[in-house]
Length: 153
Image 1 (cartoon, one colour):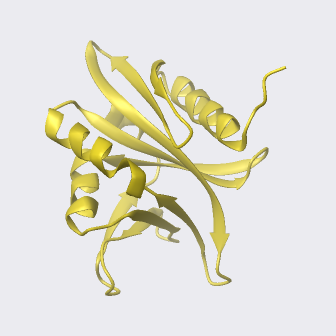
Image 2 (spheres, one colour):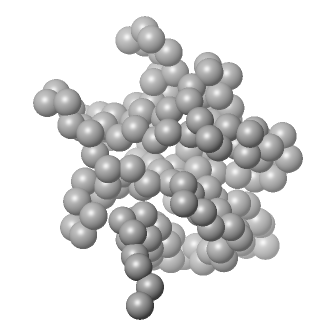
């Protein structure tokens, strides 16, 4: 019998969400820290880098922390390759009943890496967006809209 990990359920949920939105991925590379999928929509190809994280609730708001330190070289290679590239972060609230998906495009990833970020910390906002910190100051962040599946097409 094959052993399933929490990340396997998270990746399956991400694939299901993609397919529900008319996007049919093909697995390119699988690893302990992430999976990479190739998607082709309307004869346009791009790659999708998927990571998952469980919720970290500090009592004030929900957030998720994704460590990318071990993948920095790989992520920079993608940014420099010219391949259309997105990161899908699976934000787990409860692995079997609740979670959220955050899609980051290459420009947003580039801003995070240029700011020297080794973790991506996502907070859910009441405005209908997610916030990703790019620095130490309160006003140093990127807003990410909910439901960005159309950007993958």
